[in-house]
Length: 159
Image (cartoon, rainbow, N blue to C red):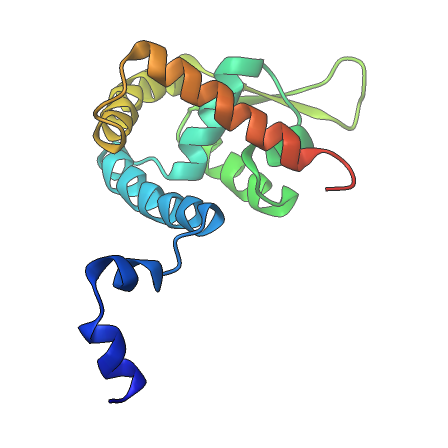
């Protein structure tokens, strides 16, 4: 019997064990599928996933420079700059000179950006509910804490 025939004849548990199912693999798969779902949900509003992330960051942190935005949205400064140009053209953000640093431009959310963000928050929440339908509010808070802890742990120097 060949190896492939042995694997196909094996029990479902053995078959499942042969699949890559480590935590890192599953988090990567989740990231891929989640991005697809978010893309599909946000597209009708004319918003990309990085744009939604950026608008959410502005809402949470107020005005930011392009470099700060790039760091918080996990994209390159060049990509952030292009995204800022697109969002400014749509009226979702405004750029103003930083009063303390003449070369730094502060970017902030506009009322129009707040409106499109609010419209899309419900869509993102629906994707999250679909992803974890069994989680109640307490479970959601606990999971958010665990995920933040994982990000902090892996973001530490030397890891």
